[in-house]
Each structure stands twice: as C-alpha cells, then as structure tokens.
Length: 261
Image 1 (cartoon, one colour):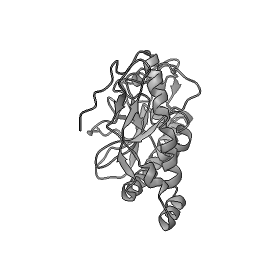
Image 2 (image 1 turned 60 degrees about the vertical axis):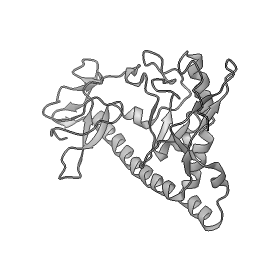
Image 3 (image 1 turned 90 degrees about the vertical axis):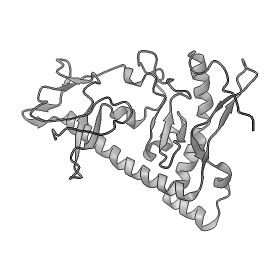
Image 4 (image 1 turned 45 degrees about the horizontal axis):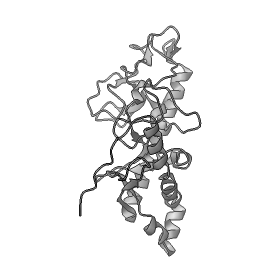
C-alpha cells in the first residue's frame, strides 16, 4: 500500500487516484451505496474478454477505433446517455449485467513508481464512497488491511489478469483481419429517415463465416472464435438500447444525416 503521488492520465469514471496507505488512511471505511451518480451520462466502458459470454445476453459489445482498439460495452448509443441508470444513478434493471469495470470503481491497481512493476491498490477520493463514515465498513484495523480490503485487492488483481487476456485477444483479432468499421442503421416508426450510428469497429460476419481449415481450427482452439460470436450476437442489443433511450426521452430527437457518396 504505497503513498507515492500518481501523475498520469486518469481512466474513465476516475477524477483522482490516491494509493491506499495503512498509516494515512487508518480511519477510512467503505460506504454501501444504492446509487451510482458517477455512471449518469457514461454511455460506454471497457470490457474484458472474461465477460463476453455473460455480457452479450444483456448489452452490446463493440470495439473502439484507432490503432489500439479495445472492447467496449455500450449502455447508450449516444454520448451522455446511459440506459442502465436513471438520473440519480439508480440501477433501472435487475436482470442485466453490470460490467466489472463499473463494479471495480472506485478502486484500481496502479504502478506508482516508474522504476518498479509493483502495483498498488488505489481509490478515487472524490467518489464519495470512501471516507471516515460511521456506517461504513473499515478498510484498515490494527494497522492491517481488513477482509473487505483484501477482497477488493483480489478483485482488482483478477481484473488486471483479465485485462492481460483481453490485450492478447485484441492482438490476435487485429492480426486476423476480421475487424471492420461499424455502422448501424435503425428505422424508428416516428421518423421517415433512419438513425445511423458510426464511430466504432465490429467483426465482419462474412469473413467470420468464411473461415476454413487451419485458420478456423486455430481461432477455435484459442477461444477467439467463441468470443467473436459473442460479440456478433450482442449487436442485436444495440436496437434494444436505442428503444430504451428513446423511451427515456434521451438520445437524438432527429436522425443523423447520412452524407452523400
């Protein structure tokens, strides 16, 4: 549990990062919460490959654009829209899947020293979830981490391991040539023009179906094939997300213009 300052770009959701320190934070506790205001307006977060098979039943999975794409789970199709929570951050559905990235907050593992590979358990002090609360669960007692802190550390360690597997999957996926620019066109009954969504990547289903021989065997044995199809199956959820955000009165009121060729 280090105490070194952290200077780096912050991941989504996090506004600040502080290493948990036995001496400095002996009075801190973790508050149980029923609302997550930090999720309001967040339409996508990273997803690990360990979650693909479960997540695809509830939320669409896409890939970011750029040279180093990552898997993303969509909770809304438009910036500032999250259909999983209401305006106060209360979960709107009990039958859905909450990504591990969200469940990890406000904790994460960070390399606090550039000359060391050691990762330290850190938290976001602005979250309102960690503080000197009378009704919270203590993080440190008698100069040692409590069981809740050990469980949090274990969860974050498992997340980092899953992130490593995700990085390898993305490397293999890029090399496979299966990724393509994504586009989704949704026709709404109340509009004569379709709503068109771009700015993400997806797997080319035709190329996936055309896999044969050694290449097909390789992707099947590595697990890439199962993950690719989990992504493909999840894309139907984009239409469900669209319907949910329209029902909530969120998202674009007018279709996005399609530029002429």
